[in-house]
Each structure stands twice: as C-alpha cells, then as structure tokens.
Length: 117
Image (cartoon, rainbow, N blue to C red):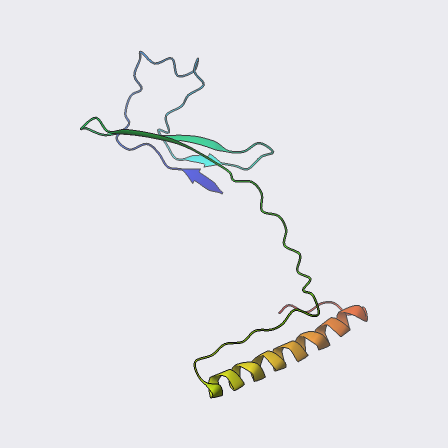
C-alpha cells in the first residue's frame, strides 16, 4: 500500500481557510492511498522562507500494457562478453538453460504442472 507522509511542522489548520468547503485536507498523519477504479491524486506544496513556493500534483500513471511474453522463433539471441573464453562460457550457460526450458515446456504441453523457474 502506498502512503502519503504526514505534513512536516503542521499543528493547527488556518481557521480562515474553509478546508471542508474546498475539499482539502492537510495530512496531519500518514494517509494510506488505496488503489481504486479512480486515479489517486495528491497535491504537494512547499513554501520557502525566502518567498520561493512550489506546488505539484502527483497521480497514478497510466497502466502499463501487459507485455507479450511470446518471442518470435526467428529472434536472434545476441551475446556479448569481455573475452572469447567468457563468451564461450556464456553461450554454454544459455544453451543449457534453453535446453532445460524446452524440456519443461514439453512437460507442460503433456499436461504436467508447470514448474517454477
């Protein structure tokens, strides 16, 4: 769960600001920001002693699209290493891992429960 931290140095709200009427709330305590079907929004203010003020509104970003795990069979496997020997060692590790993954996939197609990688 995401939380909005409490406001620093806040004690008493200004009585001249109609917080409820403006639908505003100072975070006097940490506030849990639960997800819902609407984006979460929070306004953040900073008022400097020298007159420099800043305000920003933060919100949930757009949902990330679910990546398609399928890789084209013709996609190359590009390997890089610092030396010829390191490259050979890396290639062997990938070969062994891909062989093992192929065996697990065949088991899955045959109706066996998919093992965790």
